[in-house]
Length: 373
Image (tube, rainbow, N blue to C red; front, side, top):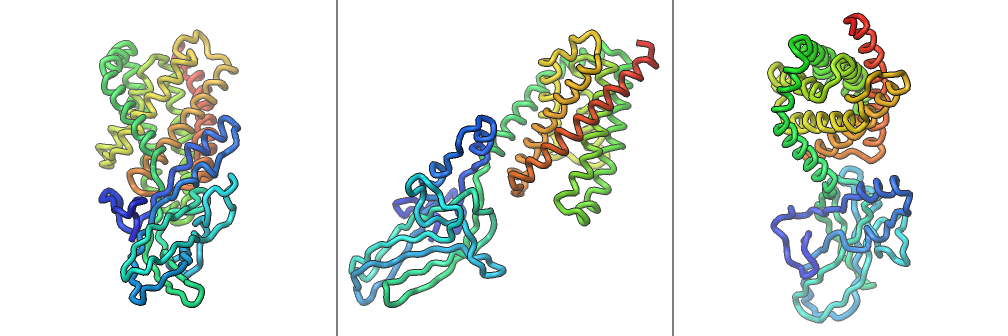
């Protein structure tokens, strides 16, 4: 029976036949940002879970029993790597380990229980459904049994991302008064322009992504987002940056995202927690970045500054993409590999959005000349 604690007691908060692995994304991010060595042994030093063996010993044998546990793929029957025989021996973690092995003693009683720690490598073991094959042997005979096992990873990064988004939503709600002042300060022309650009973002981004997204997913699978990202990255940020160049005031970004979200909610019924939190987080991150970089205080938007602010918005969207994917994994029990998240952050976030922002800066500058301002 598993999971149990080191005393063999079950925890009602954990689902039966489930092993929870630590989330290593925080450690990976710290390693990449600081360049410090990644201490893998520290993450595998503790057992991932404990297994309770309830054994009958009618002959009252006394002796050593060798325990071996392996993860078996349910479809192919192939033994998968990920379990560790000994965790963190000599400060190292094996690159390829397929089993947990240990010895315990029979005490000569008719009934006996044993609590066995299971060590797993969160860097190599993937989430999914497996069979846990347990082999007990005394040197002369052996007994093999299997039980279903689901491997999941803790979502600490998902919880942190959701917490930041909830805080962003609270800030947006508290800022409605300032958004109203922005609407008054930019006048009817600015309000109409914000509504127009948000409607263009809805018609040019949300509608085609919604209608063609499923079709592209059939053809391209998980990489379909790299195609639809041309709309959500290039087109959306081109429209946003054009609007900001025309009306450089705090709150314009909030108007853009709120109107676009309202159109999506009314016409497509896309009122989901993830959608609401993502819109709020996007508003806070972009408004904060524009304020910190002095975008609203800048008298003239030169070409070098246009390139700089485009890169800043690209970095902002990379962070927004990361938070969005973490929330999707938390709310919908999805799983994305680290390299896949990084790919989307670089291409959909940094590349597409920076390009779209720069095109928006050029478009907005030309529109200002047409408007004579």
